[in-house]
Image 1 (cartoon, rainbow, N blue to C red):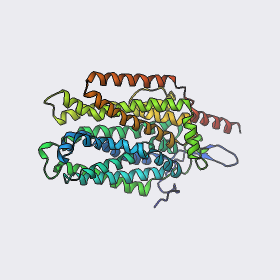
Image 2: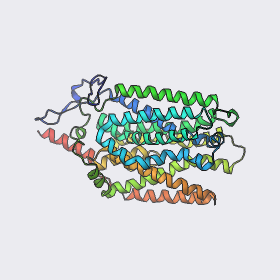
Image 3: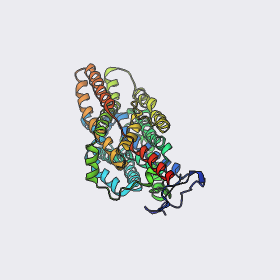
Image 4: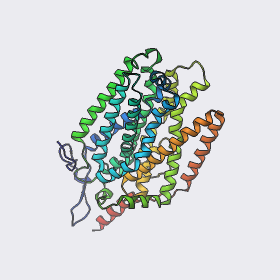
Length: 421
């Protein structure tokens, strides 16, 4: 079994001598790309997919869940909002843990919480008195999200060379958003009111149990095979990067006093607060304004909205690796924003900058859901004006950013220095 400090075993290092770079004649530090990075990316993407499904699994059949558990719509909303509330409550302690214990710890915690959450969700479908079991499962999934959404920059930075970092980060975000879309697409098909009884229906039980089994398999794989880092660093910046002497308080101070990072934090938080709020409330908006539309059709409409933008993180990641131009679009902004934060705040830990961005997203999402739900009681026009106004504010913040790409510059400076030697 691989320990937290070991990186042997599954590390099949590419033997091409052209990929080696002697960085320092005294320390003989070598940069080399490991082929096992793709296996690490697969495991990270798999838990991201499951966590993305957990995010909106109850939003896909909220009215059916309310009827089954016999609770009010206010409590029904908590099944989705608990996911974001838990991030707000536990975000900074978890960010500290990530910074303190590293990548392997982060992935293992995510996999453990995801398995517990999926198991509790499966249990909750078997009895209409298990509402608080379902609610607890969403709180646990929200805690797992803190670890999952810190993964893209952290895993990509530790395992991938400079020309693949953004692609790897975009891949992780792609699978997370794919999980969002799939949960809204499939949930109304497996959970319908005509199957309600003592349980949520056999389809629901089988589906959620299958997800739980898959998450358990990934938990075991990660426990056995996921490594903290490759034998050799994949980039010059990673070779000289260390968090061993980094103070969490000092790191937070550096980030919150960086004007460009603060602009990015508000821009990112507002944009994804809007996006997450809309995908959480869109189903109820359709049901309130259009009659005769089935849950399945509503789910297809909302999932289409999400799935259309799902390839964007991967596409923008490839573009970033080729161009290093970080002023970005909207759905692709999830991966681009995380990578921009890692670039402009280097050598601060990637997990810290990513965690703060996602914390801001969760905060704005929680606020926007309440504001938009109130505005919906007045008029849809007010909601549209609110969304448009917030988008303009986020765009203005983005325009004023002048990101300093420190990580990329560090790579070039180290290469030039080693060449001179």
